[in-house]
Amino acid sequence: MKFVLSATPVATFMRAAMMTLVLSAAALAHEGHDHGDSAPPQSAGLLPRGEARSDSFELVVTAQGNELTIYIDNFRTNAPVENATVQVEGPQGPADATAEGPGTYHLVADWLPATGHIDLVITIMAGGNLDILPVSFDLTAPASDAAAPVTLIQRLHAVLGGSVVAAGLGGVLLGALAASLIRRRRHVAAVAMIAGGLLALPVDTLAHEDHDHGDEPAAVATGDRAQRLPDGSVIMPKPVQRILDLRTMLTENGVFSRAIELPGRIIPDPNASGFVQTAVGGRLSAPPGGFPPLGRAVKKGDILAYVTPPLQAIDASDIQQRRGEIDQQINITQRRLERFETLAPSGAIARAQLEETRFELEGLQQRRKSLDQMPRLPEELVAPVSGIIADGAPVAGQIAQSSSVVFQIVDPARLWVEALSFAALERPRQASALVPAASGAPRVLPLTFIGSGFADRNQAVAVHFAIEGQPEGLRAGQFLTVFTQAGDEQRGIAVPRTSVIRAANGQDIVFEHTTAERFVPRIVRTMPLDAGRVVILSGLAENRRVVVQGAELLDQVR
Image 1 (cartoon, helix red, strand yellow):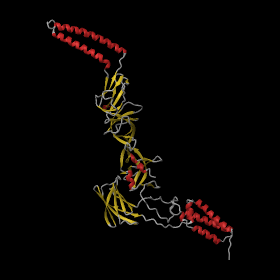
Image 2 (cartoon, helix red, strand yellow; image 1 turned 120 degrees about the vertical axis):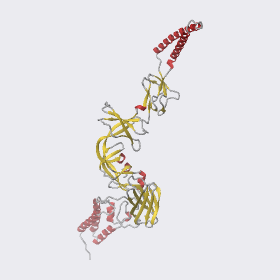
Image 3 (cartoon, helix red, strand yellow; image 1 turned 60 degrees about the vertical axis):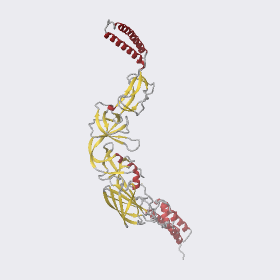
Image 4 (cartoon, helix red, strand yellow; image 1 turned 90 degrees about the horizontal axis):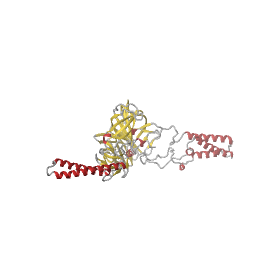
């Protein structure tokens, strides 16, 4: 007996059924797809690991095959702990780990199971501290070669990207196929068999990558890599922390004075520097050995150059006239001396008169000689202080104007800082300067207040500071920023300036070291404290570990 159903009701029924199945598949997303309401994904690509910490140490243990690698750092600073004695107690008793690098220790554990849970007890002795830390973690299960088949509905949902609209379009197509078969007066049973076969058809051989279908084997981790989680935190494995040289500090609350920022520049100490200038204009000439080059050390009194003044026509005429006068006096004195020499033996004149005449003649002859040498004697330019040649480029034959600076001499060990204050500034309790660097972190200079001016200079008052210690690598005229603590006191947490970085949205953030390998960004509000530190007013609690070195590298992890 045959049953024939109307095409219209059956087509409608098949369309509705297919739409329901496809929409249900899209709504009940299979494992491995993120649909907005699921929890943030966990870190992937990491070796099996466990961690523990105490007041002194923080350690991470990773397992790969039958080998254990132990990373031990100082809990407060995150610095690798070197020269430690490390003993690992496992299922078969204790075993000593050997040092493999700074803060890295290695142990071959043949008793390590391939899968499952493992419990270890690690004893650390370093720097007079002894800690016993338990560590537990799970080992990764091996991947299975078998995978469950994926039905057409699952495959359709996967190919169409999990979109409900796209899945609905797929249902309409399947419904149209069923309606076409019914219009040709095919049996309902045949239609049901075709639909059922299509729905149950395995398509695992066409499975695309990057989709987890529930029964697919999990990927086995092959190494450690840094990564950023959806919540913004950064997973930074210990080997990568070693490469980036990350350092931390434990935060403490305190009361600090607000700092005032002043523009400044480096100037030489006026008591240890000077200028070499010409008193009269003339032509420059080099001393024996040549002009001293820039950077050469000189001593006070050294001859650095000569200036030969030009001889004008009126000067030459005056010199010629004076020569004639002196020559005439020399002739008269010489004749008188000859006459006295003939009269002296007879006693007609006193011998003292003869000696005076002889001395007078010698004086006139010396004046005549000096007058002849006057146009040819240059002026000596000598160093007024000891130091190095900081500036100056004289050239032989160059005409130097009167009072022009030929050399500047500076003692590089005695430098000052001149800052400009646009408001009344009392004697600061503490001052420091921040010198920008072409590469690396800026340099911090401790300063000592010397004094401030009383007259305005372009609506500002000059304030002088002395640089403490040896100011190596600095030069006169170099610009910097001066910080003086002269403001109100506020409570907060003092951290190095390298801890605070500027996010893409313009907010200041610091990275908190929450676990051994996780760093969480915290939005903070800061105020300047000095050239090397800022004060966090809000956004970070006390007794938290904050990154003080390498924060900008952490922010680059994506």
